[in-house]
Image 1: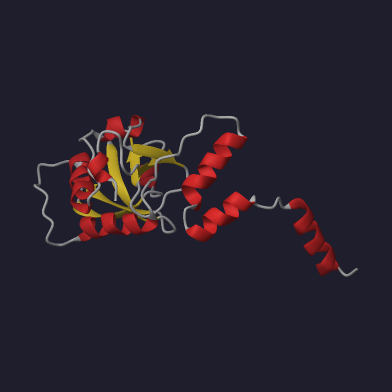
Image 2: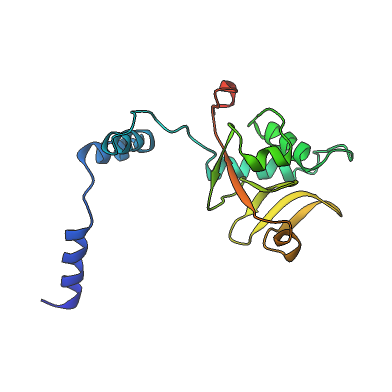
Length: 179
């Protein structure tokens, strides 16, 4: 047996196959919620679905709202008011919270390790919206005004640990936010 065949056999042997319920769910486009239910049952946890979060397309909607040149924010508003107004304008409302409150966690956002477009980027005392995760850029109220910067820049590293949060759609407190 040649090396390619041996690798193919090993992959087929060690990669678990999907159950027929998962395969059916993927074909019908309902795989997310059903897979979470299956995982919960397998893991022995309670049978409940995980609420959906912002998709990358939703994130683009948030960025479009942020970069809309017609969108004016009063100059006396800080970063948390800016982000709150942008999410609201994009159709993803949540009760206003300061950057420090959001950094500590919120019922309206789920902490994530890897950001995607439209996610919150948070430090203690500052907040922004991820524009391009591959380039580590975010949009926020900066010293020079509204703009884009790198969350890996030395200035932001000196602010402390960065955290990323993704908006939870259809929050219990905002059922109208489901899209």
